[in-house]
Image (cartoon, rainbow, N blue to C red; front, side, top):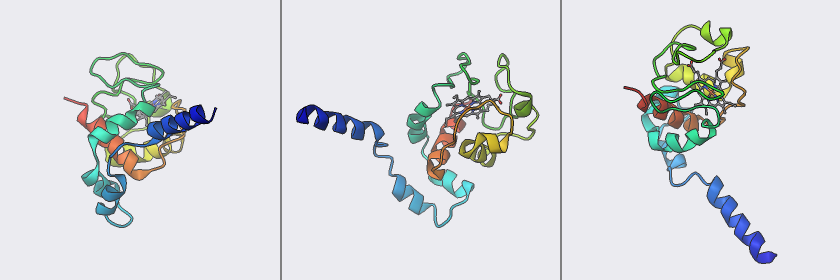
Length: 145
Ligand code: HEC
């Protein structure tokens, strides 16, 4: 009993640890109260790829991959909201959001989708850590032609 409890604790620690993504070091390098742009300078697309696992329940990102509960996200960076995947049934709320998915827009969206686009069906509480969001954005940016 004692041994298996110990073993499962170790597994839990290994799974929740973010690996060596130098999170705190990179956050310090971005300066005090960093802007979205400052965070993009220290963002790590590989770390973002690992963090994308949270999104993968609903999104594929490979080019030409099928939509899941959410639309395929290949090439999303710089595109207008709600138009990237031709076959996906976006909400009118997202289609009517206007503008483009730049780093600022994506940052706000990933922090709290329902606040940025009221009526969206992206049922996701948001990513609270700004550097985690920056890593995800760097990854999304890297997945395009
Ligand atoms: C529980 C399912 C779910 C999860 C988890 C989820 N999403 Fe979504 N996402 C959706 C749905 C559904 C939509 C379409 C919303 C709409 O049409 O209003 C969407 C839309 C988006 C869009 C806009 C796509 C476009 O073409 O304009 C982006 C960007 C996005 N999600 C990124 C992410 C990222 C990054 C994560 C992980 C941090 C994530 N999502 C997690 C379901 C999810």
